[in-house]
Image (cartoon, rainbow, N blue to C red; front, side, top):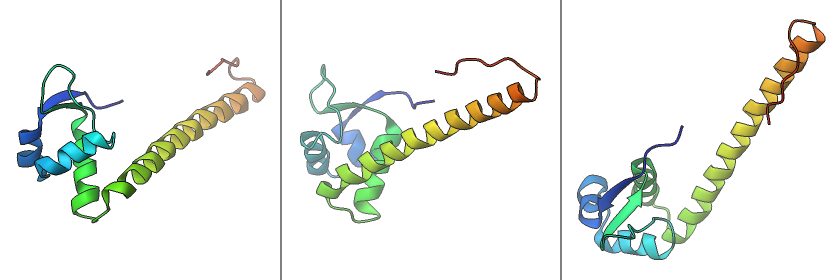
Length: 108
């Protein structure tokens, strides 16, 4: 389940996540954060995403250029994990079917 998307101001990002306002603006320019279309100096984003971005940049010292790569890899990993769970469910279903206990169902 995905985290809810909230509106948060740049100033709140500075206070809550320890990012500078310049960093937040640069993250928006790089496409790492989404601006709120109806509010200037605000974001429409998942709080977990902002926290993760701040942690990668501050705690791990990743450059802004490398953040995009790390976040893309994380997204791919999540998609692969989802596919593995789906395939495991299909294998269990096939095993049950071959054992004669349940009919096959389409999981797609």
